Length: 448
Ligand SMILES: Cc1cc2nc3c(=O)[nH]c(=O)nc-3n(C[C@H](O)[C@H](O)[C@H](O)COP(=O)(O)OP(=O)(O)OC[C@H]3O[C@@H](n4cnc5c(N)ncnc54)[C@H](O)[C@@H]3O)c2cc1C
Image (spheres, rainbow, N blue to C red):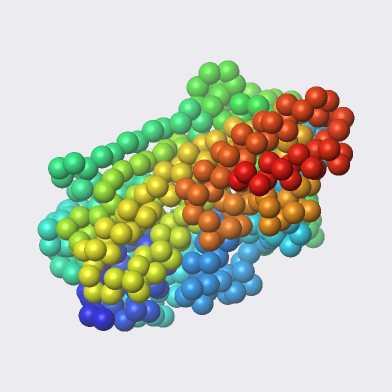
């Protein structure tokens, strides 16, 4: 295999992991990152922001020998959802079968680990080097500042520079490049539940906590220091909204009414509310993802999605995993390889974008709809007894990396149609646990 000179724009989660993959293949890789080195400067002022890492991401880490390290050094497994109602009563929903869990990891911690691993493989990372201009024909790009720009020539250029990718920006000016950017009506704000006086977790540790409230929700993921990072997903405008809660006193009163048990654990609520930004959520779709067999987009640069399935990073890591498999298949024919990459990944990027948006409605409504909860209960019970016959959609997306996102979505749609038949059975709320329902499920499962 010919060794290539490769430039990556962006040393985020995906750019750093891609660097590890490509350097392990013997290529000469340089990453140019706009921000300073987070390992030297604590960029988020010490705030911990975490992400759910699940099987697709873990599979991609495992292929370059990093799964165990990440799980051991920084992951807190979350086995179930804990739902908090307005009175503070709790209910529970396991994420999957016994032993299955998603993992809370620190975004900054994982990014730093991946950057260091990339450097160990020989990748050079240059910081405070924003991508300013891209020459798509020659896989060249200009990095740095306007006063001190540097043109970098290479054989291949990857845009791993996130949702507002500069590399994609250059592609957008080319013929037949399709692009859409959709801001959703909700934004988010991060808040914190600090550890107890002895560093203890003040909510159940190995769980993802959700306060579903219909049109909005609060979630909390655990951190190794005993704290929880909470995220409020909330309308930007209307009643209630970030706009309507325009003073910290109003926000506090609202939390006291809607999230009383959480607020009681937030001594820094006022400061967090005032200082932490209200951030937007955007969905970005585009195609093609590659140009001239020399330039490719990867991660959020090609498919930015909303965070409600906890899959954005996992999908980006899966991009690296798939690309690596295609390197085995196509060898030095990067033109064919890039075509195969975008053709394979685009339907999966679209599917997880749709699924993520749909999951928002499910999550924030979790306690609201008794039919929905019953359907989940029937599916969970059936899949536990007959795991080879039925995996609920959540399990297909989260714990089944061998099933593509697009396949998971299609299977989920068929399951929904079949479950509609079950939910239409007379007296289903009384007989859901019966032999009759199980037999009907067995018949229907044959149709999947
Ligand atoms: C609130 C929230 C919660 C989330 N939760 C989850 C979760 O639980 N699980 C999950 O899997 N995903 C989650 N995600 C999604 C996840 O954060 C992204 O999918 C992931 O960060 C994408 O990684 P990336 O490397 O493609 O992009 P980014 O992480 O955005 O990294 C891009 C990098 O490129 C750099 N850069 C940008 N522009 C330039 C430029 N012009 N020149 C050079 N460098 C540049 C940036 O500084 C950055 O370092 C969440 C997202 C949000 C917003």
